Length: 117
View 1 (cartoon, rainbow, N blue to C red):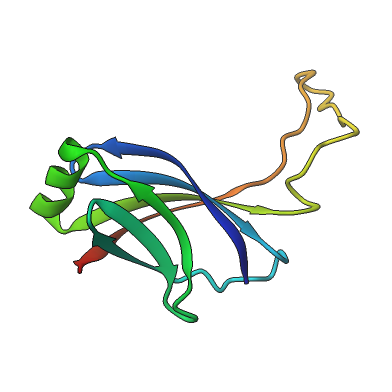
View 2: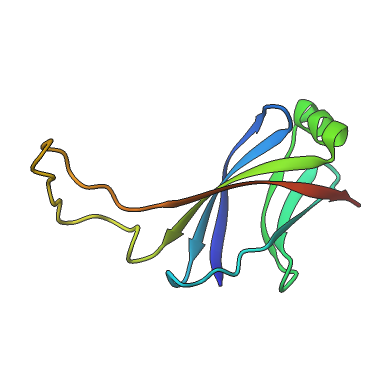
């Protein structure tokens, strides 16, 4: 299950592009099915399974025009799990190059339709 969703950036590329940080409860959780709707310049991301709103952002005029032109938005999602992607207390160096190991992150990119209300 999704614990929280944060919208970190909204850009205009070919379509409207949103960068999301999605925090999951457990590493085996795979229940993230986003759906998007727009009402009065507010874009809302909600869960398809439960229907509850996860995050929302207010759009400016240029972003709204890009959204209305394509009727889709690109989601660039970075998944995190508490305990796995929290604070790294012990740094285990890689002997070959002398750099510290990075924590594994899962990234996902998709284009989703947006429904207008």
